[in-house]
Image 1 (cartoon, each protein chain N blue to C red):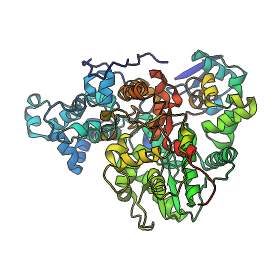
Image 2: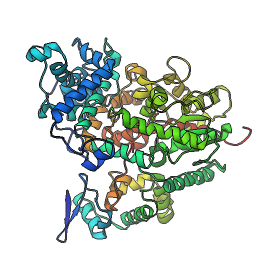
Image 3: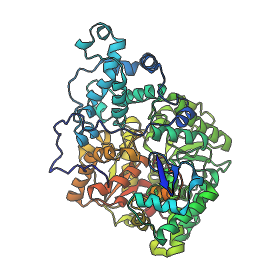
Image 4: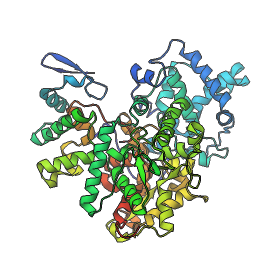
Length: 110
Length: 496
């Protein structure tokens, strides 16, 4: 599968996750969300940016609890919950947010 | 959410009329060559696949007397037909255990029985062709290897074994399932199914220690790679990552802390799950099991304890010694392996833990028995311990517990719908439909006893329910870990 943007094709896996993580850019994230019928606002970007920074340091997406804690610190305690993250990313923060952030899909019993 | 309908609850569970082929479209993504080759299988369908598949089948029935007996002994009595959750949820007759077995049995008869060789049409034998292979790929990925059908079969035919054999043959000819095989590859190189490297694991565990301290005021450690610890905890990596799994992990840590037990997690063997079993691959199962032995030796531990994971407990309880033994360097005073529920239960029996049951008074609980714990293993030193021990641990942690209907629990438990390597988004329709019997049973105790939460003892069950509960009008957080309840109720501090 591929995503087309501004005349360039980006390769993805069957579920729309980028194959080459270095292909990622802001516009591509917005486009992936658009295909899913979603619009990314500042709150989404907070999560996406956190995921990308964490990935850069640890080569893996953060655990849900690590993510909720970080979001809580940044956006206020009431938003540091998985419920809030599911409102932002209804298909699951770990999976949907990782996709828009250009990271591989978390695998395993999750 | 998706383009299929969630089955409706009926006033009482009923056996649906058959709808031929309604799930023929359901199949998981096929693994790409790099994934296949990493775990020792051909990258794609090989040219001489038919002969290789037939030969492999012969090898499997020669090596497993059980498999041959299962294939030879079915008398088509029909006792299994309404016992599979996937049949009850989808109405596709190929999801009746006998029909699923026959997809395999028909080929076995053709090539490995006298009658099938000479009079195939008289004995339901058929040639192996592309169509058969496709059918196998679809319907052997609609079996969660839960073994419920085998409980009701008068001959004890175990469809799980046949499904594992079919998947192994598929892998050997180059048609593997992406979800399982990608995960096996990760676990063999990084140490866990998630691909969680040591620095990330260390960071996650430190974060949990901070959380516990903030919440309780007590320093509870979650040690990583601590040489000389007495206990090596082998737990599913979902316990580090997902909810409600992580709340269970916090519970284990509090139990060890309060009992004064020295323990550690290993970054090298940071996975209890062993997906090698789901694909019937002894070699892959062995690679993962050996990591546990190596970690235990390297860290110099005396005991191995497993966290809440269904099939991991089956592999550990039944096969760990055969796969990776001997474990004669461990302390013989303790069971090898031991389940975390056994550890907690023993401590409770000895009044070594103080529990405040009222900490869980906001919940009315029930328990979903996991297939692999219920039907493929045991706990404790008495018959039925795998049913009694988890319940006693829950009852020691809360005031309100009721069981779901008797034909849906203990050895008759229904699969969560996502076990056996099917917990993947490309099979979500199957997962939702297959969970119908469990959801109906849950609804019944919600109606009759105002149950609010269902405890689970397996990482797959927990993730599956978090995902599918909303399809049936429940909330995703109505599933909890057993040791999450322990975590809420256990009183920290004071004398050990």
